[in-house]
Amino acid sequence: MLTRTVNRVGIRLESWIRPNPLTNVYGMSRSIMAAALALTLLSTPAAVLFPGKSTVDIATTPNPLASISFYAIVHLPITYSVLFSVIALVLIAIGWRPRWTGILHWWITYSFHLSSSTQDGGDKIASIITLLMIPMTLADSRHFHWSPPVAGDLSLGGDLTRLCSWMAALMIRLQIAGIYFHSAIAKLGIPEWRDGTALYYYFTLPTFGAPPPLLRVLMPILRNKYGVSLLTWGTILLELVLFMALTMPRKRRWSLLPIALCFHIAIAVIHGIPSFAMIMCAALILYLHPLDTPFTIRSPLSRPVSHFWFSKHSRGSEARFEAENRSQETHGGRTVRAADKA
Image 1 (tube, rainbow, N blue to C red):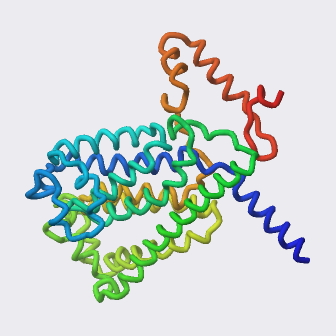
Image 2: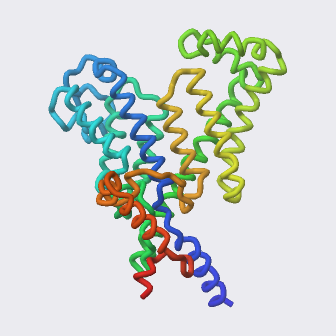
Image 3: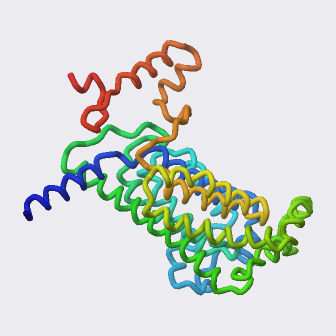
């Protein structure tokens, strides 16, 4: 009886870790988070992000962990530190060498969260996700995270690597589910959210409210007690549904992704916080999209450099590249080249 149970658990575990989670799905999430921080650094003067400091002074930062901040360790004018950060984030966004840039991505993101005086909740979420993503990036041997996933290693080491990657992905999903659960439950403790009028006040705020042209369109709905209640309570309901997506089958989770993305894009348009929306969209991709089901994206970075350059001058190289892709066959849940089979 015990042996049968152990074998059954082993079979289930093996079927769970056999697919490769290191596809362009998690790569898309990395790129969006890196682009969000890079846009923040490029669009906001350093004097606003780090006010009153030519270099970040550790002694004036209340957080005891500030000593590990990139902006505190690198004793350069803050403008040069920001420039280096942007260059590194661009390399991360284009997907170059995930194994080399995974820890760097977390370090820059966490350093910005520690040292900047203008960070928001999205920066904290990005620092957590990039930290939890480090086991995945260390296991990723591809040149670019847009490339097709590497054929599965059938050795014990390969199984352990995929197990660590899937466990990291699970921790990320638990974290994101907790964010939506906390957000929904916290709203229930505020009278304006309970009585269904909260969004009226948020949309009409002078600083972070809706732009005037959009507010004129929304005002008839906001002044209607049924309309504003539907929007307010619908927000709480959507966040609870997103929390419950943690236990949903993957097909149902997948169907929620467009709705959740539109939700955060709407927040960006109404409240003018695109970086937060980009980070949450990146988190939702990790949370709702199956990691082992790549996006069908045609990118020059998803092919070898030699194929990319030769394709500019010869159609033959493109044909050879497509022929190599078609030569891949699936055997027992593993992808191998036809030449390797022989």
